[in-house]
Amino acid sequence: ETFGIAMYADGATVKRAPLINMLGSGVYNNAAVLEIKDCSEQAAGGGKKDAKYIATALLEHVVELQKKVPNSVDLVIFDGAANVQKAGQIMQRKYPKISVIKGGEHVIALMFKDLFTKVPAFKALKHFNHRLYDLFGGGRHIPFSVFTTEATKMNYGKRLGLIMAAETRMAGE
Figure 1 (tube, rainbow, N blue to C red):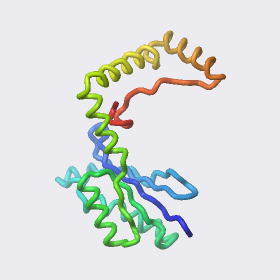
Figure 2 (spheres, helix red, strand yellow):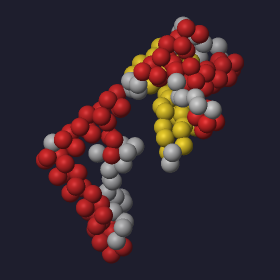
Figure 3 (spheres, one colour):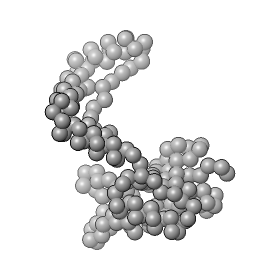
Figure 4 (spheres, rainbow, N blue to C red):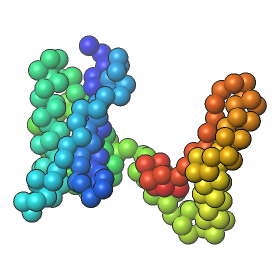
């Protein structure tokens, strides 16, 4: 009754498949996958993941959620891309209670990408991380086993691992 539902959406391309990830969040469920929409049919017909297409996809979920609890969706978070910001404006026209904001993770990811590709010291650190991960992160059984066994002992029995740079975390940096 007090707090509404937030929706998050982002366009993605995974193994050349055009997708839109749509997530929801509320007081009692802070992370729910509403849909991972395959946009292949749209692309095959010459269409793009434009503002109208994205807004329509998200509004389907808004309609369903608001059937159960009217005016429940009150926040939509996108990255700063023009097409999704326009999609947010379309959604706001249909549902004036909805606020649309930019998520900071995309901006931060771009900042890290700039740092780790243009600043030599950061580039060297990234390369060092990749070499450490290659050695201790699971690609080679003996060093990985020694690392995880000793790290677990030193951390009071809690297993530790290395974090590998990935495109899903800070643009691969």
